[in-house]
Amino acid sequence: TALIGLDSDLKKAKSVNEAKRKVYSHKEKEIEGLIQQQKRKNIEQIEKDLVVCREKREQLLIEQALYVTTGDIQSMREKLLDNHPCPVCGSLHHPYVTSEGKQMLLNLAESVNMLTKQMQVLSEEVNEYNILQRKITASQQQQMVIHKEITEKDKEITDIVNRKTLLVTQKMNEEMAV
Image (cartoon, rainbow, N blue to C red):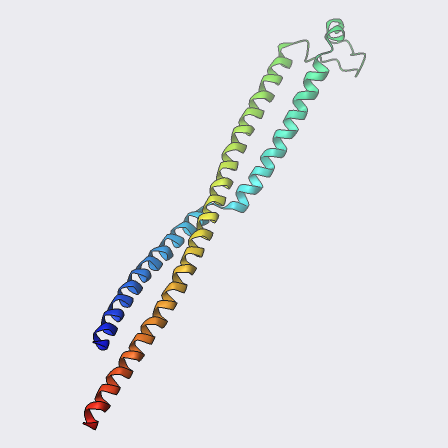
């Protein structure tokens, strides 16, 4: 009866261990897939592009603010005449008097909007990369737990096999003694 109990324990332990090995293998494939997804995202280039995009956007915003600030001097603008020097800078060309100034402001606003959208896309890619990294880390931690459980079950199986071997040896010795 002790031998039958050990056989039953061994069968259960092997079954549990096989199931854990399958889960471990599945986690391994999952991690490989996540790493492949992550590799497709060149995070270093994305982060560089994001920095460049931010810098360009900031420059355009400064340019836009300067253009608006200098363009708001209405009283001086009304006194400007083409081919006559500006009392502030001496220029003979006065873009704020013409529609050229409005178009320049529209172009700046459009460029700022475009860069803002590009920054959002790049930020989303960085966020997706970080999410993948967290998933990889979580899966690796789960895999380590499963590995530990497999190792413990392997030790249990070895212990059961050793006890079974000892029991069989004792039975054989008892039968020989009789």
